[in-house]
Amino acid sequence: MTKLRVALLYGGRSVEHEVSISSATSIFRALDPSRYDVSLIGVDHDGRWRLAPAGRPPAAKIEGPEVSVPVTPGVRSLVDGAGNVAVAELDVLFPIIHGRGGEDGMLQGLLDLAEIPYVGSGVLGSALQMDKEVSKRVLEQAGLPQLPHLCVKRSELARDADACLRRIRDTLGFPIFVKPANGGSSVGIHRVATDASLLPALRDALRYDVKLVVEQGIAARDVEVALLGNDPIEASIAGEIRTKHDFYDYEAKYVDEATELLVPAPVSDATAEQLRDLAIRSFAALEGRGLGRVDFLVDRSDESVWVNEVNSLPGFTDVSMYPRLWEATGLPYPALLDRLIELALEDHRERAKLETQFKTS
Ligand SMILES: Nc1ncnc2c1ncn2[C@@H]1O[C@H](COP(=O)(O)OP(=O)(O)O)[C@@H](O)[C@H]1O
Ligand SMILES: [Mg+2]
Image 1 (cartoon, protein in one colour):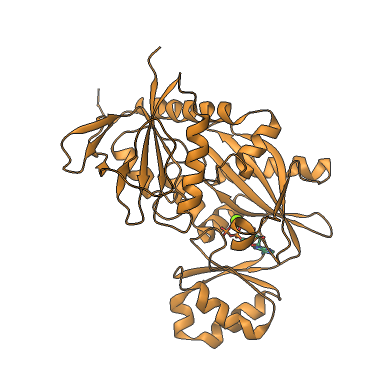
Image 2 (cartoon, helix red, strand yellow):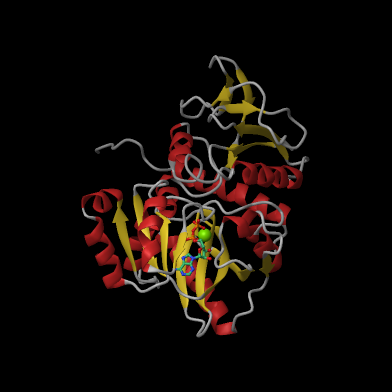
């Protein structure tokens, strides 16, 4: 049997660089060597793609000769720094880069131009899911439950800060969550409990994006559902994150060892069913493909459910929520990887059938 040539692309220019290397390491270890020939491509902090030595897990520091993918449809090779010698061939690429340049559609556009099959959502799905503010508009239109929120732009605050603060106070009550529209890992997110801290929170969040989501805060539990599939989409059972922090902030995500994942989430059967249904509908509304994770806020008092966000590239280390949820739903990590690769190839085959020219009879 000829082996499938899989390229793992990891690292990247974001605060999630190290998490991405951990995810790639877990994936590398779980990919069956009798089925796959794996190339490792690390993206360093300067955004350069580097070919790592074959046959061993990714190193903590990204080094190696520079490579790139030519955007010539169908060539499907990696070329050296000078751009003329093919150094590896590939059948499918598994991008595992979080945040800007990795899961926001830019990389997906490059891969589409090169006609390289890849795991996960395409350009539109990635871009939609990355932008919390546009996501909210689309989810709202699809009738999916959203907490009350506003969009605040840097230009609005610069023009008339008092009017902007008034607009927020007139619509929402404290606590208020302030979030950069494009972000992740809770970077730049503030839970604002008092009027006096609202303006500083807006100013700080605007360091990370020119557009913010300002949202009603509630006392909530973080509950997540994993999605898998192109069409139909399947939902895993739900899992809950318990932290000792005020909310699931950067420290709770990456530093605090006391953060716990509860699988399955301790919610009523009716809520569990509702979460899975809403997860599938949210993922579909945001053009999700392959894999994704829908994060909910579940009200601590009455278990009412709000869609918080959809992530096109959830954390993928072997202890991350996404693979843990599939494991608990009956799909072990290596089988999950096989399925994701199949889905990437399947989607690519379907799209390759589309006409690219219009022939009149
Ligand atoms: N409206 C809200 N009410 C209560 N908690 C919230 C609200 N919005 C966000 N949070 C908390 O903040 C965390 C991070 O917010 P989120 O929108 O998921 O940003 P990120 O994309 O950085 O993960 C959530 O996991 C949740 O714990
Ligand atoms: Mg989140």
